Figure 1 (cartoon, rainbow, N blue to C red):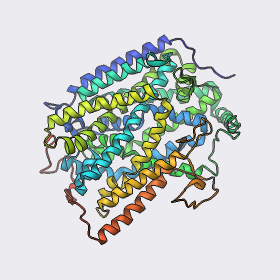
Figure 2 (cartoon, rainbow, N blue to C red):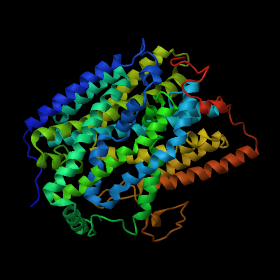
Figure 3 (cartoon, rainbow, N blue to C red):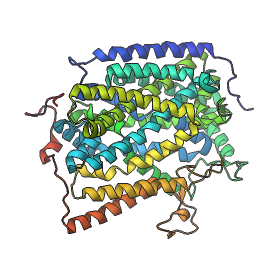
Length: 557
């Protein structure tokens, strides 16, 4: 018999525990302004990067809290719940991620510390002397980050909905608005120090909850063998809307390439997000980054355990809660409902608080990263070139508020499902900054106009491919997922793989097109000796460390 979702009444014990723990992190958020603080936070080095002096432990919790978000904790098991093995793509991509970014992250930290860069677009501006290319990178980062923040709200709302706060209209969103108003206030005051301090609480709670869940729930439900058998049988049943199986506990012939390219593309994209680099640039030195790249895979172990909860939810017969605002089943409530039905109320409250707080940490870092991009690469570059450090900090604080409430608007005025689609687009878009940001850390061979042309082609082609993907399960004709059949791949009307049902990740295809165009335009530009801007960086900048003599003082204008 299927376990039913919680009823419409408020779960008072769970809600009380949630409010108490939420109150604790709120206090920490405001106290953080004095934690490891200098005389003033009126400088982006201090407000936006925490003084560039976070050590190994703080950086580990900060970057971990940044990359493993509330949406991750509800969406990955929800994907496994609905599709099976494909949902585990998140596991290999986080395993291969850290070796891939180990060396580029060190070079980005060094050149940024040496030159005072706060954003990846700052680096591009200095490397190629091109405000235009830097503007494109900044806009891409902001556009890709906005729906990512909205997805943190999706995770937080899934928890609130499970606790009975599932109203329709503006009243139904009121708890969410209160939570984000509090987040906005302490981020405005404390900057990056707030999520850095709160991350300790968030990650501690998450580890406790997940470790309890993966031992307690299988024992209660008949063991892992039974859970896998039930999941295999359930996923193999035909979907009434498509007539095909909903998923499989092993990859199929058609989705293996999709799995590989999605994992690789996601790994290449993750540290291109502005919020990921913000955690790196806030580190004290290269040794801190090295230790973190070696230690952060511990979160991948956690993610693997978490993904398995999708199968546990199938075995427990969990049914997602219907979103009262849209009338559709909210698949993101699968894990919260599983916890609500199988844990004592007090522990479910702790689990919900862990997920809820898990929304605040990345949302704060993302809004700070987007605000830094706006301030450095749009406001200062185009609107007020003579802005003082204090004016930059003020502008970033205000921009962080705008970004947060822009993300809330996603949830208030559109179906949350669209924010998921927009984040899918964001992942494809941010991947197109790889040549200008990551590759350019090693070589300046690419011409700046080649990078601009490649960026434009990758962006347009990536979005067009996503636009053409339908979702039969929901009836959506466009932006229905990230699996493009090779038979639908078109290059100026030419279909190189006609009829093929093998699927691939569009972001990876768009990146290949980006690189090809960038190379061709670069060769042409070099042939005609087109000026390639001035490189403000020097070879030694890419190797500096915290104790080097003559290093630029933190907070220097």
